Image (cartoon, rainbow, N blue to C red; front, side):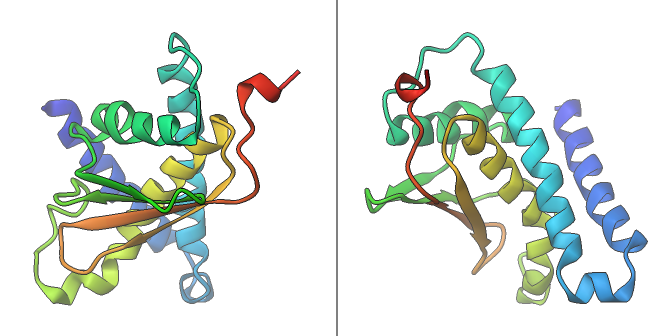
Length: 166
């Protein structure tokens, strides 16, 4: 439980620090969101490398997404994704009905505009993890009522199966 509290505090301080150190133009141009997303990308790459070192190869893209929703999410956020949907054409929607990084914020609508800065790191985390598993993607997040949130991952190009790497 203490490690979860530390992660939440670290994440909040990271977001706060990026925004405090930014100049006004950087905030307006979305550079802070990009910086947080890039931090998450690198962390996601490292975590996936560590989590999968003793795992059997994944047979397909859906197998990878199930791993992200169950094992990866549970390790990072202490619960599984509540719902995974796909169109079987490279678009996946991961729904977390009680996303840990948003539960500290009020459920009121007044904080919805600030949610994106608290989701950027996690978008990068997912994108970095998928990248290390051979899936180049674009990951976005959407919040309609807090603390529920949806992450949409869209594959860019084809999945590079480990069997195809020589």
